[in-house]
Length: 118
Length: 109
View 1: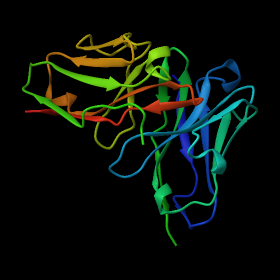
View 2: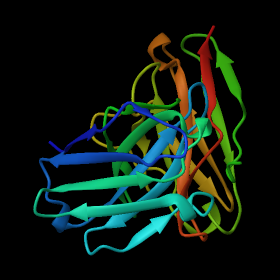
View 3: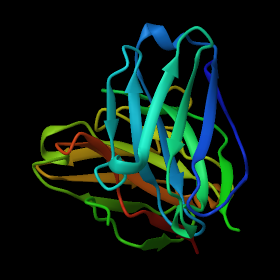
């Protein structure tokens, strides 16, 4: 069974960089699929942040592209998100997930709330 | 902000049927596979439908999906109280990003 688990600080100060890691178990990232990040502000809908293929190819939401970096560490079977220059508008539950071209987003982490506040 | 439009809410009595529409364009739905997700309160979304109309293992056949042109539809028959949730469509977009719908809240009367 594929499992994903997010980890990282729950509180980040404005203008700083938000950093999260997603540990994957039950499936090797090197075997394929796209691995991505999705966020959901409190009481609002889902927003795709970006994804990475095991080869390192990245795809970012155009509205966040200038501030986002997603990387993968196949040796640890995990991938990471960095979002720079955060503001209160970046406060959200952040999910890591696996996406297939045909299968959609088929596995999700439980989500982690990140609050941007001084 | 989302490029996929859904009705904010739909409702029906237990046992009845509801349909949720998802309207996009040729940049997304028109040329890509559509998925649907169910998000129960306080939980992560779960995949309900993929490849326009296929159900993952464990998803009951009360849930169905279809696509026509630049729109997609999720149907739920035999509505149950446990179906009360937010539902989102999703697909790839030519902007090289995945996009979600605006979300629809299903209420069982």
